[in-house]
Length: 167
Image (cartoon, rainbow, N blue to C red; front, side):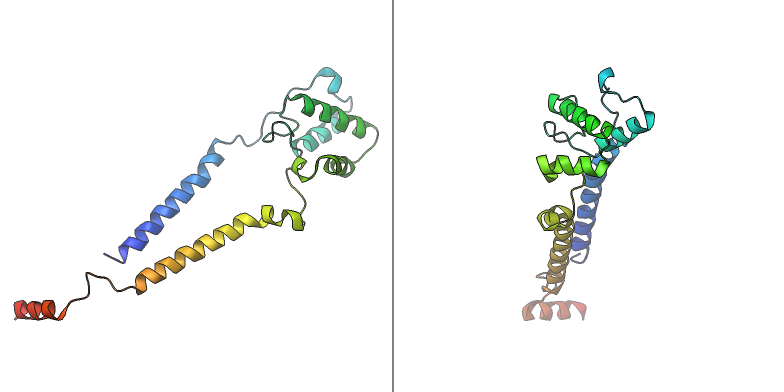
């Protein structure tokens, strides 16, 4: 019975983790519908328009914080879209536009921030937390297995009474 308790705890923990991780994925819309553009925001060139929409999906709205610039209807998002479009029409590359926004607003504006010492916790923190948690759980299970079970150890008087009953 004592061997089954850690297994049951691990199974419950794994099930809860699976549910916690899969629920947001099941509810998430895989490709969010972009916010409609005002006619004056559109670019005449369809290839440039597609490039700008893709770029706007990679940048975060600073007001909404959980939406891309393409999805947001906030005033600042509209201003940033206009700025991005003006720079693109002027000939700026995606990298130059991203660098301009990064210089102005920091890593937060990028959905995929650069891998640098300031963002290591963001990139590697979840994995470190997972490894530490798994190590702690494994250590605890080993410690429980090493502990003698109070129900399995017999005192001398109980051992003598069991031997008497078995005769």
